[in-house]
Image 1 (cartoon, one colour):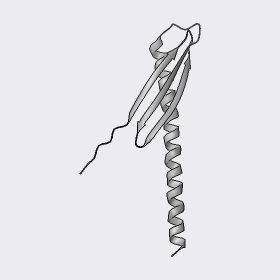
Image 2 (cartoon, rainbow, N blue to C red):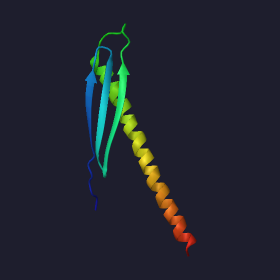
Image 3 (spheres, rainbow, N blue to C red):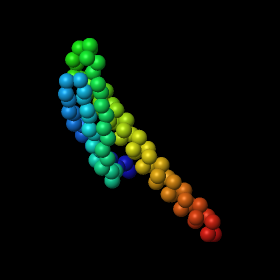
Image 4 (cartoon, one colour):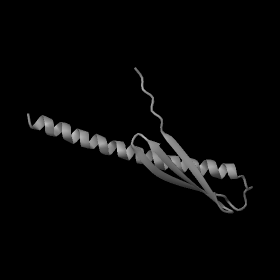
Length: 90
């Protein structure tokens, strides 16, 4: 039997003339994490907001991914320590 879990990521953008910031929020799996990313437009480049949003969003999602990996490694470390303690007490 397969169970389905849903995690949701919301991304909000703020922009000024040359910078776009993306704030990503992850809900799911017992997590509520926040990540962010930023993109800066070269003043000589054309103003194409979608490009700035894509870059900033990808950086915010990378920040979330880094945090998820770190959290998972922390849990694995605890489980490994418990396993070693269990084996040592036998």
